[in-house]
Length: 146
Image 1: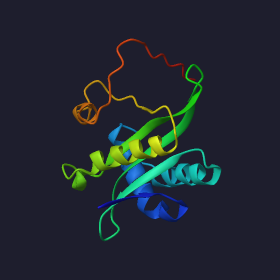
Image 2: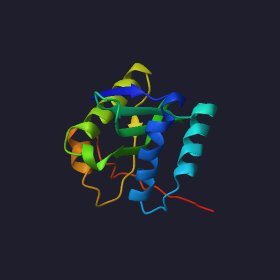
Image 3: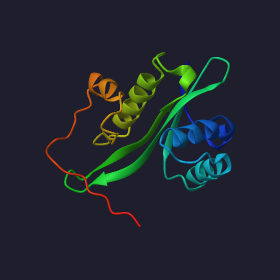
Image 4: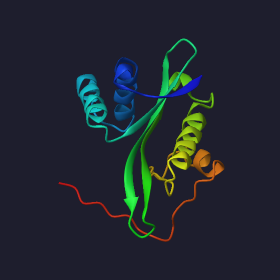
């Protein structure tokens, strides 16, 4: 397995993984919409996507980071918005490899770090904690949706 920086040339590999990720979170399957959403991310350049691929080029998983800023720290930070590992690649270290790659990227970029949110019952929390992620218990997060 290797982790690569995804480009528009990887859409055929990435789009089915992204669609499966959305289905995992109880959204209806929409392969064309998933492809178009990713196409726009590459076209606009407003995210960074890392793709885990097998030695044969099969897509195993991905993570997508969105740049943001901390005004208080006056530094760039990244929101690790998406992390997905295909069912066939779970338990093989794919998620860990993607997270470590994202951490290395954040260091190289001189950013403040990475932030993510996850469901309270997501078993990946154990992986996050093992890799040095800290659960923020000092602040509340609020959302407003249309």
